[in-house]
Image (cartoon, rainbow, N blue to C red; front, side):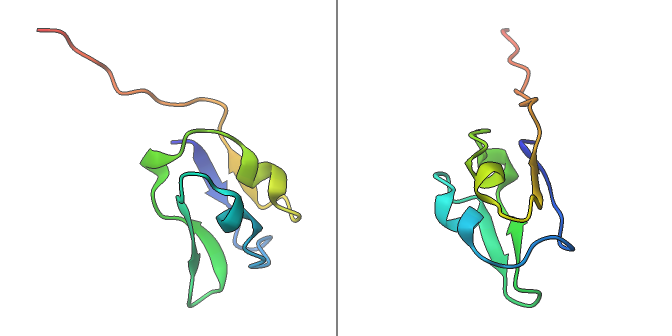
Length: 72
């Protein structure tokens, strides 16, 4: 998982992370008006959302878990 967490206490709902994500993995939760990571498996660890967030509410893990490929 690339986006490890989006802190709802720090998120102000500005949508900068949503607009900056090239893979469209972050969406706005309509009930709380906060950003949530809907498709973490599609995140490519570009860190743009973390850099764009004015509240430092997003933490992107530097470790990308790659599925184990098994050759038969």
